[in-house]
Length: 152
Length: 152
DNA sequence: CATTATGTGGGGGAAAGTGGGGAATTGTGG
DNA sequence: CCACAATTCCCCACTTTCCCCCACATAATG
Image (cartoon, rainbow over all chains, first blue to last red; front, side, top):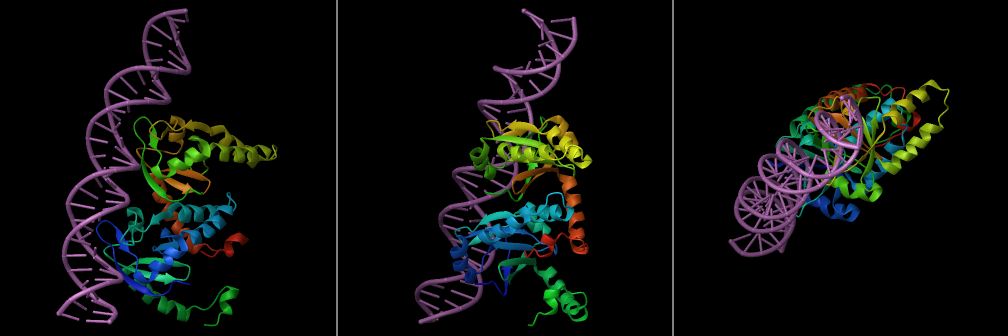
């Protein structure tokens, strides 16, 4: 049901990216290969099955229009949300603008994250990963309530 | 159903702008190509399908006339609202006054925002985007309740 | 080792985006 | 009311991008 795990992925000169085989069947069931890609504040890309994205989008649209934070999120997330269909070879074409945003060169990494997938530039991912390993240990102050009680 | 995603757009010397192909069919269904363009506080332009605009306009008109903010909004939004039809090539002609308002030069950006579209000058958009990305990270205090619990 | 599944790359046709000439329409001033 | 100017709109031509298709390379399977 959920996406998990990591895949090394090549992005070719045209900006295409093959969807790993293990996701294909499921993606066709869930959404007929219709995906939505958008940006994340950590400079990676988020990939949702279309129906899953629409739930999130609806929540965002319902937010009060005059609120500054709300508009900011709407513009970043909805503004960059691009609907992509998988082609006959089960690839998706990442728009140039989104590739630039995530600093995607030739080598990328696809990360399963539950209801969504994340695409990272390989180097960026490696850096961040090291960074997080340190942060998680030290900083356990100021967590939201739900996190304080989390048992993993 | 909703508008989303980003398009690079050229505004030609006459002030015309091609509507991206993926929106055309839908726009003709919804409103027969009849659009309303107006201004936004953030110096971009807002584009609504006519019926959608009429809902917004009604809400604005119903606001209390003695409230300063309300009058201000009414004058800005209703005052600048211009009805535009798409031409035979699916382009719209942006009035000079609105182009100036948004600082639109040759290169612009069209952003899907749910029920409406936004038109930005390319440079302005890039600046704002960077600004927002920083804001999102640092400032997560003082969010409306609906935002605190948002899971994306 | 043969055979199938999976990833990767590129050529070419179709569609979308862009720009400019000129006709038709509108508005303005005499 | 007419002449002139400005604007708007339609048409055509060019350029760029996208997407379908085929081909091969690499890895997994029996």
